[in-house]
Image 1 (cartoon, one colour):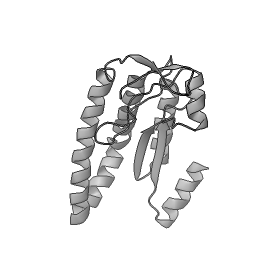
Image 2: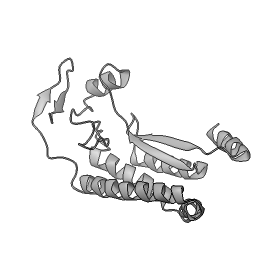
Image 3: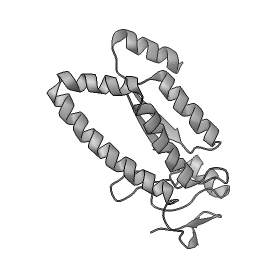
Image 4: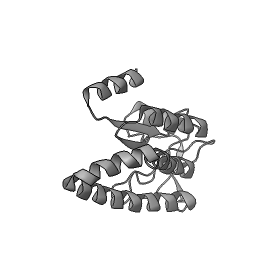
Length: 173
């Protein structure tokens, strides 16, 4: 369905922004790789890669807490960028953050995508300024995420019970 959608959008000149999520139940390193490959196949003009967040009161939150996969830490850094708070025995938070970085790198640093971006910037001054701003912000965030993943995330915190949840979680409040 997504492939057909992209084909139809290209026919009529609609640019598509693709959104992808890493870290939902069942996620593995293999499924991350498959999702990256799928995104590259779709070849949307832009993408966003998010980490799964189990917000309190949702079915996902209840399931992750019940299974002991929910780690209560900050959902975002001081700049508002997502941090992982779900961790599986076979896929830890640092691996998920590394998956986000790899997703962006493998997607945007392909020659055809770089050319598509540069081509637009060459002929449009406004687009050039916008892309310069976005590129500098992206590279800064990329460096922060790489450091976070390399260091394995934040330092371990004392395990504390979360109100209304039977599993333990690490607190970072």
